[in-house]
Image (cartoon, rainbow over all chains, first blue to last red; front, side, top):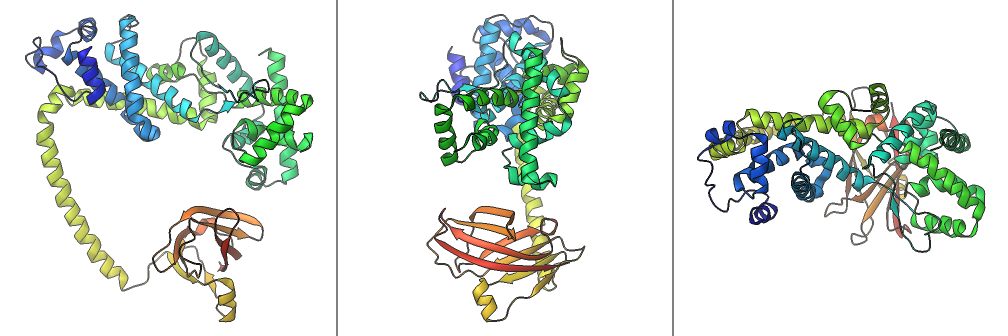
Length: 208
Length: 258
């Protein structure tokens, strides 16, 4: 646990003690299998932590700009998530450990990005209590199935409606939408309403 | 607020982009009107549908293998064509894989660290030398450019509308196809201590451009760089003001001729 704390506090840059296992990198890299690396990681081996942390940092770098000030926080969450998954023996060896860590990093970063931008929806029942639930947590398998079904329906919605709603989701008011489409504001209002009805009807028909 | 108006505002209410006052009005109405409550439910169904994205698992699997288990590739690709957010996330995921691979090719962390100081010092020295060179070059170019007018940009000095009319300064600014933009200096007479300043550019009532937290130089002037493609021909009104109530404001007139 000491090694974990060191990583969490120092971003993985400080070594507490030299590893008794590895003399140098050339000796370490070819000799360790993924499972050995996992075992040593779970055994609080500093070098193993360093290796996995390096993968995490390299894999999350492309998300740095989008995550902005939250990048460091996101990395901490990813480290804890990787540790949690490896402790639960989620790594089955179907792919290499590096690929597995990369997938976990990308999952986590995308979910973190979406969490940052996700809108909250206040239902009528809890208006008084000001409670909110997130609109798009797609973690479980059933939610993934729902997402697939909804995306299937979305493809059936006319492209014009998808364009209109893309503007709404970007926060454009009616006037700007009308200006961008070259139609009157009143026509825009009618089209938005019709698209809304069409979408609700398609969902109702599909029973979702 | 009438039901029809509330219904029209529901997409923005769900998107949380309604101004605070309007949002409170909508919530107040929804709490009292069961019919609009039902309408909110339907609007939420539409909102959820249009705001649907590929699950992160699917995106990552697709980035790695070009497919995702249990998902039709055509569905993924159709959505990616439509959805900028998912498309951007896919790009980041692919970049992430490339970065990880390139890091490994460079020799991984331990190996890299061993040589990192060598590369760091040499890199810093190279950057310093390059910066000095570029700095010298830019100074030399600035000297050259300061002696001749900047091609591609028009420099415009604007005075508050009343002052400009009094002194007969209402000149047209000519833009041609080589004009990239105009650099506008607003010679404001507004008091210096009333910030932060906002700016709006309008053609009649149509808002063309707006900007918050406008920078003001110590002499009270505002400077803007406006791309030529953004600006229509004719008379434009530039409004500078402070505060929501526009307690201090000034109008400028910008005449563009193409």
